[in-house]
Amino acid sequence: MIKKISTLGVLATLLMGLSIVGLEAAPPQQEAVITSPQDRDVVRGLLVIKGTATHPNFWKYEVYFAPEPNPTDQWQLLGLHEMQVTDGRLETWETSLVPDGTYSLRLRVVRTDGNYDEYYVRQISVVNAQPTETPTATPTPLATRTPLPPTPTVIIEQPPTATPRPTSTPGPAGGTPEPQTGTGLNITAQGLGKALLYGAGATVGLFLLMGVITTLRRLISWLIAQF
Image (cartoon, rainbow, N blue to C red; front, side, top):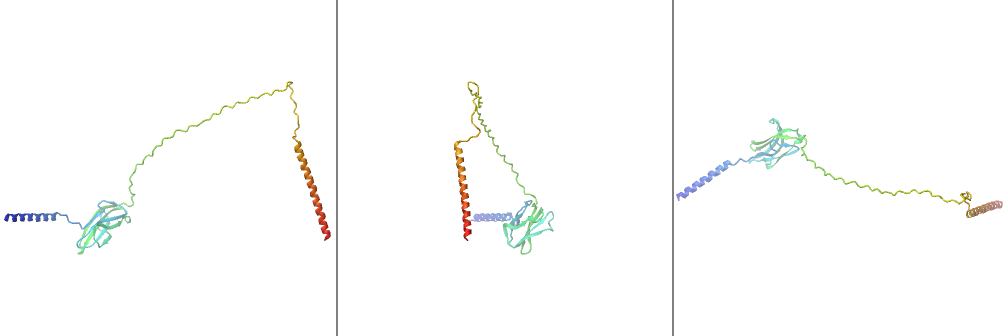
């Protein structure tokens, strides 16, 4: 019985010792830390500052920036907050409002008794004025088209035209050509008849017109005499 009690006591002592060693070996919890950006980062534009700002006696936390290499007396306040943050956004920094160069960031977690913990990020390069590097792409060569064979030209050959040879007209046996009859005027009986009819019609029409005019004159004269 005594041996069992001694064994239990030894085991309990060993467990307590291991617990104490484990507690002493556990790393202390960071209550003021910036996780992004980190030392020597290159930034431009609107920068989101991430990290943790907590404490059992938390009052507030403050985020500052300053140009390097000697930022001791040049810290400028970016923001002051009275709510704790655990692995989240602490502040935003519009880096386009400052000249390009190297800067430091400072996180200060202030406790209710006025004491504080601080965390620094060094050598942050602000490069808003420099062009953004673009990857150089190798241009893809265009496919070479195989030229088509030339279209053959169709030539249509015309058969040669035979030149007619002059033919001789046989004349009379005596060799004397016959005289041609007729005049230069081509007057036919039908055409002469039509011309005579047109002339007669025109003459009759003229006489009728003169008769009508004479009758009208006489009628006008009689009417004037009546009145």
